[in-house]
Image (cartoon, rainbow, N blue to C red; front, top):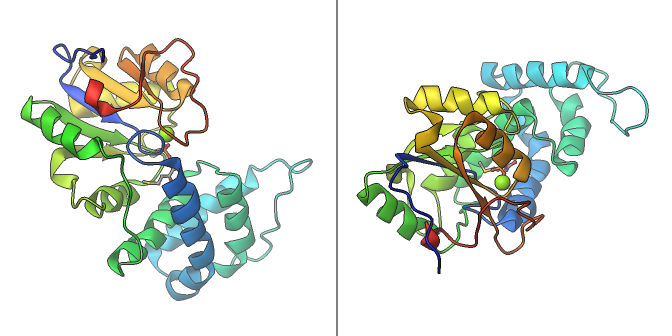
Length: 242
Ligand SMILES: CSCCC(=O)C(=O)COP(=O)(O)O
Ligand SMILES: [Mg+2]
């Protein structure tokens, strides 16, 4: 096995889906859970300020939808429950919408608290988190999933609570994952130059953006990923080689 050297790296920044966590857990467990629970959730919690904030942001995204071509469901009334068909549509097309992700995070939080959800991670993740932190690396997450959802996911894995290994979390409120500026902002917030940060992801466009910002990059090739074409980026199949 060839090892990726981390001597010049202080921080390891990780994507979730396809990198720490099987795509199948996101698509076959998390997304259906949110889809099935969203109507009941909005009925009970729709008047809460944080949910109203998500809906207001979602409404802005809805207003920017193309009016012709795509089959975007109508959201005629401004009631929480009336947003359900549009939310189902966004989940079905895996839209990385900040408002949707924020709402999904709240719904999943209930599932984790009720013991209905337990998150999956690849077998090499916990040993790598231990090893990297022992080497003095700081670990951060950058995912389209909301920060709340990220904390829940790593707090409730099948191998226990991994949040003590993590120094912080970033979501699309910092910026889109495919834009270099998001990685510059993350580096500034972490307090390290991008050249001291290694970003690992299964999405080439995200790696390109991180590389453009000056970060080191590794392509994560995991069973069940959408694509295993690294397009020239160094490829790993496990964190054991980092
Ligand atoms: C916080 S887990 C939920 C993951 C999610 O909603 C998602 O869209 C996956 O995005 P990622 O950026 O981690 O590939
Ligand atoms: Mg991913």
